[in-house]
Length: 124
Image 1 (cartoon, rainbow, N blue to C red):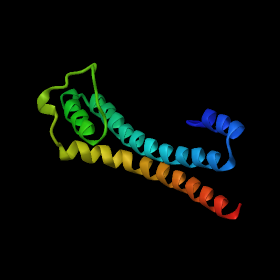
Image 2: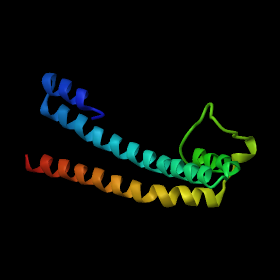
Image 3: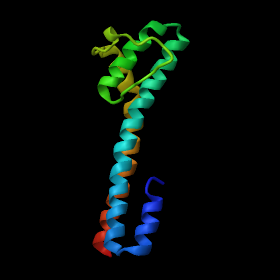
């Protein structure tokens, strides 16, 4: 749905090659977005587990490790200290363990769509 409007407009006013470019670019953008979102889901799950276990003091380390991986935060509803911004192998491992299966699944689905687009471009 990211580029549905783009595809409608380009499809109405431009050539088939232009539409193909928008479609291919959309698939690449979705693949990158899904990979990032999947790892952020890993961070979210770990924060929930830490809150549920009553270990709120470890949330900063998880967030700090997550920021080093992908994200940027402004104001947060919990304490995030400067000392939390360091590599915590354990927190990063939990993020990757949860996020990797989701990222892999989304990546494979997105790649299959790109492969289908390539096949269709060759055939037609």
